[in-house]
Image (cartoon, rainbow, N blue to C red; front, side, top):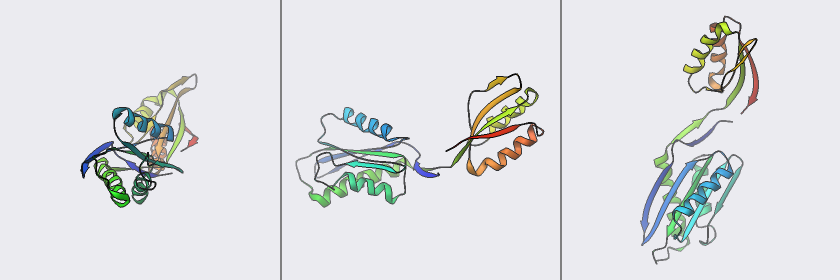
Length: 201
């Protein structure tokens, strides 16, 4: 399924009434990867007062206020992600308390606003649906196949396998480009290529 995520990792720092808020946002492929990034932020700032976070990976989303009053940090951060329709990402906002309490509304604005500025800096990219194929061609047209796969936009390919019948190559192609790729494959192989669907993602 296609989804919108971050183009890059990014950070943003702001100071509000003496407290420092440092945001880190990054794309991630799993909840485990998100939790590793959260742990890394804790290690980088071991003396911070709070490490509040939120992540969304497909149907899985979690957040934490990490000791701040309930509903003032993690949930507002997740809501920023949801409003922007972002997926497969994690955000951590680290706070160094400056001695002045901000109140529930002030905290929510501080955490969500710092995260939002980091998201602005990260940019967005669309991840398209992809389809994986196993391609098999005789040796005589393997050069044409490599030329096609090497230059096809957005295509990912595995290491080639060589058999007595020819060359086998697994490729993954963005959904909007699949029909054009298969048509071009037929042309360059003079109809001798076989393309088998092996996985949908």
